[in-house]
Length: 233
Image (cartoon, rainbow, N blue to C red):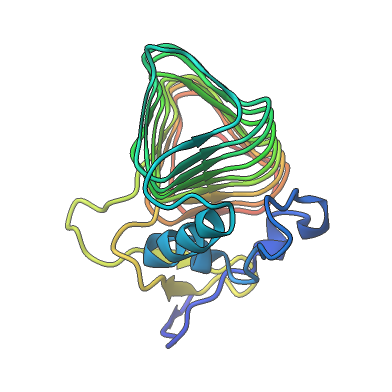
């Protein structure tokens, strides 16, 4: 397996999710071809554009239900039929889609896109991340600088680590060539394809890719790219 260097690293988002099935929160909102364009500063810029198109500038716009004991600060959009429970904290820029649940004690630290019918669960912490439609992190998860495909399910206690111990650039293994590729990002957690799953207390190292319909078994630490089946440790 070689070491490849690219000026513009590329992970095809279409390899991980069916783009035609995604709900667009605004007619002009486009999901990028390159998944890496939905992370880091690029995600922040995309969110700013999306929120501006929804007339969200500095203060929250709430169309769903928010418990009086939840805290919502900055440019945050909460769509119709979304539900934010007591003690949740949401910091902008953040988009919360229709039918999504943000449960008790959830901590959303900003630069977050959560699509339709998702779950950000009890004491789950999310930052710089994307939940595509139906993605669920129901219990005690950490989701940092990551993308969850449609109908992904994270088992209780799952951690998507986003920063190497050395703190240097994150690499990933290309799903097609197997080459080790520079991401251009210092913080990059994981990219999980549609219907991928993690078992309870699993840990994914920075730059991990799980293709659709794959799974990491409970208490397993996985690093790399999983193309099919189960990661058993």
